[in-house]
Length: 71
Image (cartoon, rainbow, N blue to C red; front, side):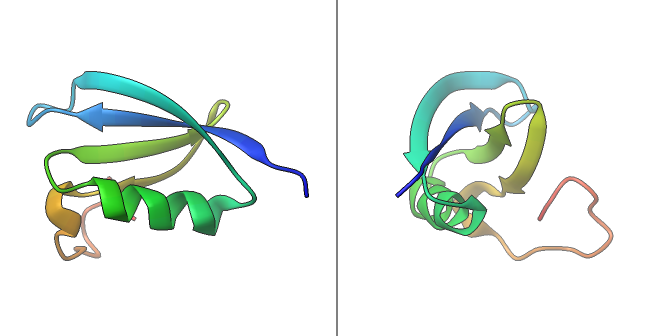
């Protein structure tokens, strides 16, 4: 099964990158599921190369349709 490398950027309150981690997943949905499980302390951006896949809010906070930075 082919996997893709995804970069997770863990963000502070101002949106600055605190930590970067690379992970391999079979698809975007699997990467998103993993980020949701890891976002207790920080928001996480998910990147596939130059493509931003999603941003998961800290604590998996409810999404706001007006918030263009969230999923």
